[in-house]
Image (cartoon, rainbow, N blue to C red; front, side):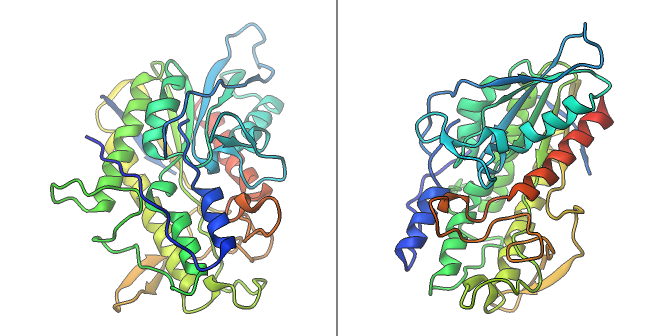
Length: 350
C-alpha cells in the first residue's frame, strides 16, 4: 500500500530561495505488471489538449498517447510561457518533451502511424497526484510517458538548502529522511518506500492502458558538470563538493526509478510493456564516479558535461527573473534531448 506524506518546505536563508522552493514545489494533482527493458494537494483533473500528427497510413486509427508526470514532463524550463492549466497545475505544454517528440513523429511518422497526444502533466506533481488525477486520463491509452518522483524525494528542497548557508544534507544514505516520503512503520527505508510507491504507480498506469500499451518512464538529468566554471562566485553548489553530492542524490533517485520499473514489469499481461529512457546526460549513462559524502562514505555519482553552468547546458541554473520557477529545470536543449529519446523509442517499438 503506497504511503505518502505532505511536509512543510525547508526554510532557506534568503527570500529568493523561498521563492524558488515555492515555485518548484507547488502542489499538483494532475494490479498486474508488464515486461521491462532499461535502455501536493490533489487537484481536479485537468482537461487535456489533444494533438494529432500526419499518419503513414492516412486511413488508420491514431495511437492515443498521454503524457503524465511533474514539471519535468510539463515543459517547465523551456523558452515558452508556463501557464496554470488548472489551479496549482503549471504547465508549458508546447515546450513539453512529449509535445516536441510528437512533432518529430509527425514529421517522420512511426511505422504504427499517427499519434494523438494529450498532455496532463502538472508542475509540482507527486506520485500520489499522478495516481489520483492523471492516471485515469491514461485509461485505454496505447502510449504513456512519465517523469515523477523528484518532488517526493525532495530534490528542490535539497537544492534550496544547498544554496543556503546550512550546507547540503546527505540524502543518499539508506536511512535518509526524504522530504515527502512517509515512514511506513514496517521497517522499510524511505528509499524503499519510494521505490514501492513508484512501482505501484507504474502498475496502475499499465493496468489501465490498452492491450499492448507501452509506458516510457524517463529518469532525471544529472544537474552538474564536474567543473561548473560558468557559475557565479559563491554559487553554493560549486563549493565543498556539493555538486557531486547533489548528483549522487539524483543518481540514487534514477536507480530507484529503474528498479521500480523492473518491479512493475514482473508478470506481463496482454503484451503491456514498460521501458526506462535514460535522460541523465546527452549520451545517457555517465561514467561512474565515487563521491565521498559526510561521514566518509563513498557513494555512486556521475558528472553531466551539459549540466548547470556547463557548456550548452541541458538544465537552467538559478533564475532571478520572472521565470524563477524554471530554475533547475530542463532548458530547451534538455527538453529536445528527451524528445529524441521518446521519438526514437516509439519508432523502435512500433
